[in-house]
Length: 245
Image (cartoon, rainbow, N blue to C red):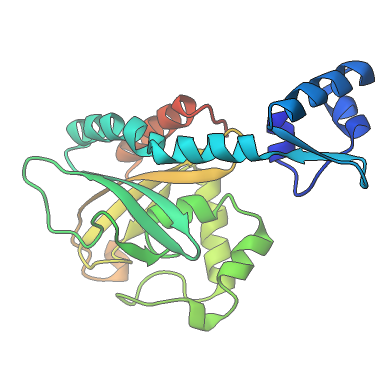
């Protein structure tokens, strides 16, 4: 019931809850009453509907205070670094930007702009597009409403909404996301999304490495071997947080 309520934009009637969960109405009312007594559900008598209560908010806040995503991801990133020999990151979407939460480096690291706490325009790094690709088209349009929303760092990367959508579509079909010199010249990255319990993109795992690409004709590599390791790490983190694609 809590999971169902958390995925809806507003309160629901007991009859709708019972129908969607395939429960007898009497059972649904009994469970809702128990959840309401514990504070996890709020009854709105005028609307004859139920919504999430304060206790659910407190539980979610406690979960966030414990930094579970970072704690679960750190050992996975470390193992990814050991397997591919390149810097690994955990990033999340923050509006139209990709925000880096974690970075694990190999013994001989490269100097990268993508440090912990750094924000980059989400359409440029592979990690940002790995999350954008699984948002609704209307959400992507809201984040990038015009040409002015598309920051250019190196002369590469999508410069308007149609080109971004084409890139997101092709990469989503391929199964992983690549950035070759979009953020920093002579560096590339490969990323894959991490999903929450509702199948939404909650984060992305990426690895960044040096790749000299003097002109557009020298680009276009998609690194399937590296991508297999990145996807494996992202899928493991998805399972660890109880998510699914």
